[in-house]
Length: 147
Ligand SMILES: [Zn+2]
Image (cartoon, rainbow, N blue to C red; front, side, top):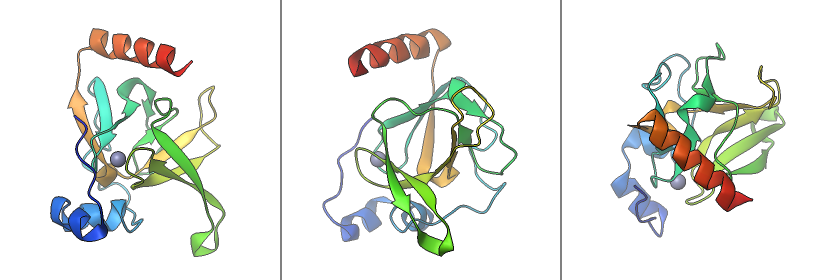
């Protein structure tokens, strides 16, 4: 369920836990192999922990061995990519298209046909279990809407 987006950082602080705030609003990074959703293998939808927008379907998740939840594709329109030159590296930051919160980074060394590896903080995500049929119907509708 999508939630209202706070107007400013003081309001974000009220609705997020300190850990969520540090990652989502201050571009922090979970320690590898610690995230609650790293080994989530049920069928369903991963949503933005800040605003509730649906971001990644469970059938795009794969085990990258990196220690962070990894996906080879985002739902169309759900994420925005931002050039990130912090920490002396050239990376592509992934943010939620609805609320602008930090999710993780996108790398082009993915093992599947998309070549994408969305490396996402578990703290930035929530998971909602869904029936496989519902998930397939959602994705079909979403892809039609996007085209
Ligand atoms: Zn969001």
